Structure formats: structure tokens, C-alpha cells
Length: 469
Ligand code: ADP
Ligand code: F6P
Image 1 (cartoon, rainbow, N blue to C red):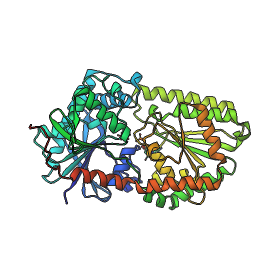
Image 2: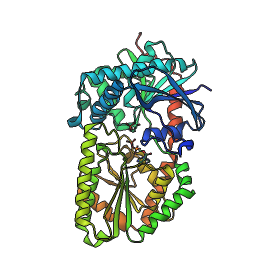
Image 3: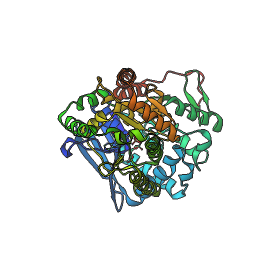
Image 4: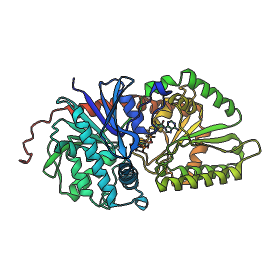
């Protein structure tokens, strides 16, 4: 069978030799799980910077996966990662035009790093390999590989939303970015909504069309575009929650729950996650329900993310103030309504926390999918499951209809959903959880990987109406 070469900016699978901790973020978690059973290579940035780019590969074997990383130059890190990826594409694709910076040097750094990645990866690619590129950092990678003569099948998966046409066109060079996608054989989106937004752009902006076989054609090239909703390793999660560490964490949290029911939030500290809106919703809940104030506590775990980017620093400052204000107003001498933690935890610790929580607040303003919602469901006790409160703007809301779906912009909706979750009877909690778990278990990370890889492997049938190159 042909090898799978996975490429992503962030490469950091959980390493048991280092206490099992890997990167925080959906992409790393999903790929670590997806690659566990595959022979292949995972290539990307080491997370380190050096004064001058050397292209030196660092190869490691972690949990059966060959991990190949390369260091980036400081300027690359600033222009490509902090710049184009996280000050341009990330905010724009999450509908935050107000935070989007359009600096020419960022685009140059983005193209330069994609070229450097391609040059470094090239010697690792064998003729039968299939290459699977991930996320917005690396959209032009296939273009660079094709220019170097690579004819292997190359697929791309976007972990974040593809935004509406009107937003894409605010990007200088939007056409070049979309054209670069046409160097892939297959591109995958999290949801049908993102797929349709992409198709909308192709039809109206670059006069593309759909062939009879369902391929998209533009720029004289064709590709397959499909939705592949990403999942979690639900079986593994359901298993680790039974392990010793998860149980210890669970017992410790339950001991506190004697005094207060716990509601949990787990997110990178990112403005797309709706953290402020969630806290304001929780504040509204405390205001509206004086009788429940002493019964409920919110544990918000929010590890720092992209903290060299100003918008993230500003958010952190605002959250510090907001949490201080709410705790100041509603704390008692012996209790505080919000516990706020800026660090990351091991997966098994998180599993214990999820299980001990009566409800989870997952309230992004925009999210490609949101894996925390799925992990929360996977970790629940089938005999006494907690309730998922989920934003309608998370990709996960398309599949997880039995959650309590809220509009995170409405403090009242968050407050009402909390009240409903915490008073929900066992029969309803079980009914909702069973349907959610069934979905999380069926549409898991293995199904996502297998569906994508099978679609990428599939030989294109000859297409009668394809234009001559
Ligand atoms: P994103 O990819 O935008 O960060 P997701 O919800 O899809 O959002 O994925 C987040 C992933 O990061 C989940 O697998 C979650 O368990 C993990 N994660 C988030 N916060 C922490 C934390 N404090 N410690 C460990 N893992 C975390
Ligand atoms: O899942 C979306 C994503 O942007 C991933 O591409 C990324 O690895 C993760 O969030 C965490 O962000 P970062 O790699 O910038 O720390």
C-alpha cells in the first residue's frame, strides 16, 4: 500500500517519553490519532526558530509515526506564522475583518515558507506516496511541489471555516490563493456550508463550473471538493476516562462538586472561541438565578495561544478584567464562581474533568468544527451524562443536533441553556447523550481519515467534457 505523507504547520503528537503532552489544538490531536495506525511521515515546522533557514531535517520516531521537522527563520516565523497565517487568514476566515491585517510582507513570507517547506519535503516523497496537506498555513504547498515536478496525488484539508465570498474578496491576492488550491487533486472542508461558500466563490469570482462528475473546474484545472467533518478518537477517549489518572482527577473534582455543580469550558485562548460572550452569559445566569449562585461553578481552561499577536494579548487582558469583575461581584468568602486556568493538561486529565462536569459550554463565534464538544460527549458516564451546550456557529453543530444549541451572542440564551442543562432530568440527558455519542463514535477520526484518503486515492475517471489543457 502507498505511504501517507501528512504535512501541517504544527507537528507535535503526544509523546509518551515526554509525559504524553503534545500540542494543544484540534489539528495536532486529530492527526496524532489518525496517523497512529498508518505507516507514513508527518512533516512540518519544529516550533523552533533559528537565525537563518538551513532546511536541515530532524527525524524522530514517535508512537510508530516518523516525524520530520524543520526549523524556521525568525523572519519566517513573524511574516508567515504570526503574520499571514494568524493576522491575515485566521481572523478573516473567522469573520473578523476588523482584526485582519493585509501587509504585503506577510504574503511574501507565506509564499517563501511554503516554497521552503516544499524544497525540504521533496527528497522524502517517493513515487507511490500520497501527500495530505493540512490547514490554512500551507495552501500554496501543492503549487510549489508541482513546480518542482511532483505528480503524486496531493490532497488538502482546511480545518477552519471557508468564509463567505464577500469576505474572501477583501483579501488582496485572493485569486492567487484560490488558484493555488487548484493544484490539489482533492480539497476537503469541515462542513457543507464551507464547501458551498468555496463553490460560490469559484462560480461567481473566477467563472468556474462543476463537471458532470461533480468536479470543480477553474483556471484550466479540475479538482474534487467535498465536506469531510473531522471527528475525535471516541473509543480511545471513552477508554482513557476509565484509566487511573482520569479517575483521580474525576474523584478530586467530584469532591468539590459536593458543594457546587461544575460547568466546564476548554479552549485555546482565542477570540474565535467566544470566551467573553460565554463569561457574560455566565454572569447573566448568576444575575438571573440568585437561588443557583451557590450551586454552580464554571471551570474555564484556556491555554495561551499565539501570544505574540496583539489581538490575543488584548483578549487576554480583557478576560482577566472580566473574570475579576464577575468573581468580585459574585464570590463569597469561601467560594468563587469562576475558576480560570491558563495551562494545558494531559488528555486523560481533561477526560476526568469532562466527566465530572454537569455541563460543557462550547460557544465559539466561528469554528471549523470544535473537537472539545466531541471529546466532552465521548468522556461522559452513560448512566449519568452531562449536557453539551453548543454554539450554532461551530461546525460540530451540524452533526450534534441533540446538544442545547445556542447563539453565543445572546447572554440570555446562554443563561437559559445553563438553567435548562442543570435542571434536566436523567431520562432527557440520557436520550440526548446517546444520540450524540452514537454520532461521535460513528463519525470518528478514523472514519474521517479513511474517507479522505480513499477519496484522494481514487483514480480520476476519464471525463468526456474536460477541456484540453
Ligand atoms: P482548535 O483546533 O481551534 O484549538 P478544537 O476544539 O477543535 O479547537 O481542538 C482543541 C483541541 O485542543 C482539543 O483536542 C482539546 O482537547 C485540546 N485542548 C484545548 N485546551 C487544552 C488544554 N488546556 N490542555 C490540553 N488540551 C487542550
Ligand atoms: O485547528 C486549527 C488550528 O489553527 C490548527 O491549524 C493549529 O495547529 C491549532 O489550531 C492551534 O494553533 P497553533 O498551531 O497556532 O498553536
